Image 1 (tube, rainbow, N blue to C red):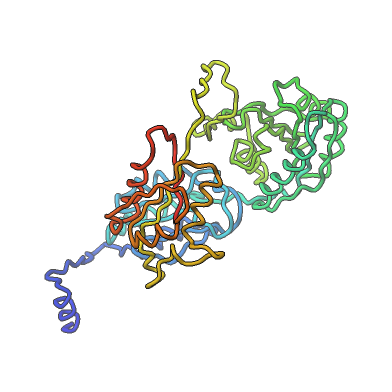
Image 2 (spheres, rainbow, N blue to C red):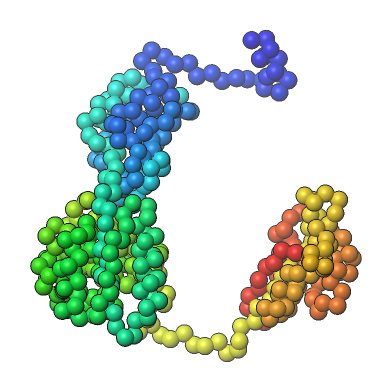
Length: 409
């Protein structure tokens, strides 16, 4: 005790505040551990608590299925008790943190902790629907205008999408974009796969189009066409004798997240997807602006009156203190001082003007760039940091410069 007191006094600590638990209080770590164990239910793995927090981790790869009503009940029991999870239907891999229980103060009332345990045990608060479909059949239709390289890239991207789920493409067939050829391909492929994905060479416009009509002709039924997710509007969901069939929208050829990912994940996890489920995806369904999509109702943007002018700012003012006594900018690289290389790159890219901001060892840096048609801007405040040098470089630009690329010396 005396040693601790002496250490606190030496550190200049004059007061120490102590939290003393009262009868009926449960220490924050114990409370978090008890509630987390009840929430886990053998489905997710709780971590040992620390500072009133117990994290929970996925025991399997799949889709997270939190019970929103139960979580809302838990968070309403007492202000000291909170639980947070990832979003519903989020894809998780084994070992990923999916939820956390946090006790806000140093303790929570025993009655509140016991009630939280009871609520957690009465429901599957956090469960994971594991990916269980393993084989995916792919049918890609072709047209003379569709390059083979596009089909190959589409397959590669699908393989990458499937990899975290454990599913693989068991067979791929490419047929002409006609109802007869596509019907035969779907009918032949479906009995040997857990799921079928159809990439049409032409976008689906309605349920009478080639892809949906072929699925029906093969003996399948259309579950739903269209979804309020962009990108992903033109997704088709169908079923053929219990085998899910997806008519992929054009955005499924892109590796970026889109509506196809959402439905594919649910299908691979064995989760039934109804038209109501699809229609309920609108909030949060605007994933990205499609800048390449034609907007005929917009006024065309006039071309600039002159070509844009782009300059370069080479930041060469620093001390390079991590190199010790040597100035890194002046050290030889391939026979030339390092600072000449970004300057040469700027001129090689056609940038103009090329402004070099100097500071530390200004004369030596200038000498290293002798013969280069650069514009120097000195920053006497270089010791204050990179931002001051950046400001000097921007100020040295001509008024008609539209943009500048910043390079480190």
